[in-house]
Image (cartoon, rainbow over all chains, first blue to last red; front, side):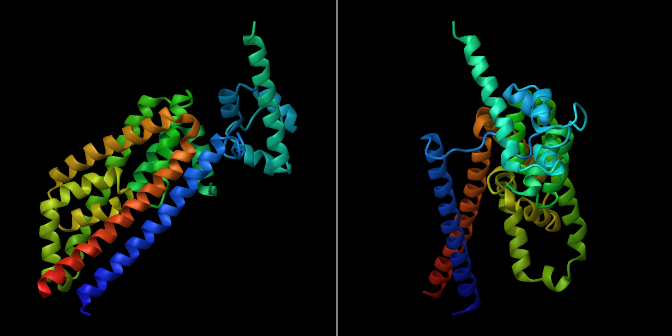
Length: 117
Length: 196
């Protein structure tokens, strides 16, 4: 086989490998999304990159309540992410997130109670 | 999600459009940064009222275009410094001719579909002396489409932008795979025809 054919076959194999790899990943993402939508898989609402002001704005939980629940200073370091806060204060990340998630659930149920006549 | 992604998302919340602009600029310069993911997140944050959408969009477009121009300039500077034994070969000349004919579409499509090859395309355009005005046209239209398309998708699907980001990167990988496999198949077919 000459050089042109070799490189062509190589390109074909490399391309097909990429197609198979990414097709599998896309399919996996898609099935995961279906399972999340059907409620079969639960996904955490909170992410480590979120800051306290962002959580306050998006989920309607006051920053002061989050700070109290996590035992953080009353103010300051607003730019710090939730993950950094939990790391700095030596808290278990799962437990810490659960505390904030409980506050979000509380805020949601209070909101729905207010909206029902 | 990786540490870098987390860092960039927290940065986007704290520094807004400035961080978005910096990431889009350096990504266009070839630094491996998750620009599309950040663009989707910026769209979602704008929808949630965390980020001003107009300034984020304008800064994003301007930064991506500037980054493209900078990498084109790098290619222009590097072009004459490439060894002559490479640039004087028939293969290089053929590649340069072919790029000057159909390079516009390669530049345009690599802005928002085949984004991982945008940087090498910019370098190629610069080093082969592709007309800067045609380069600028393809880049400006392409980047405007990219920012509006992905920022808009992030805003429309603000609740599921992370899923969208994962799907977008996988679909891009899939398309690049098809492109490489198609190229190999086309060359094989051509060499087979020649042999006959």
